[in-house]
Length: 74
Image 1 (cartoon, rainbow, N blue to C red):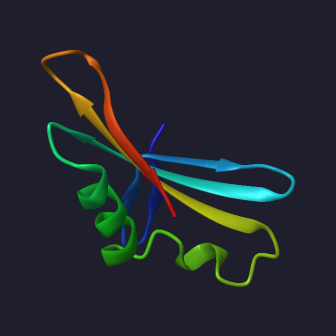
Image 2 (cartoon, one colour; image 1 turned 180 degrees about the vertical axis):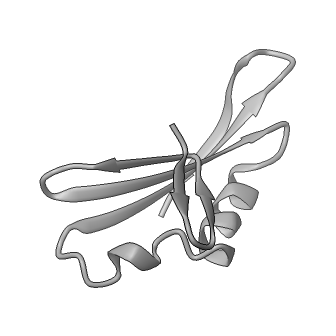
C-alpha cells in the first residue's frame, strides 16, 4: 500500500520496533533511480527525529522475467 505524504507517495513504508523501512519500486528502471526518488521527494523527512534506524531500499522489477532484477539498500 502506498504511503501518501504531502510531497509524494512512498510505495511502501514498514515501521518496526527498531527500524523504519522505506521502499521504492521501479519497473524496468534501476534500484539507483528508486533510491534517488526517495531522496528527491523527501520520503524520509517524517522520520528525521525518529529514534529508529532508517533503511532506504530501492528495488527494480523486470517485466521480462517478472522478478526482482536489482535492489540496493542505504
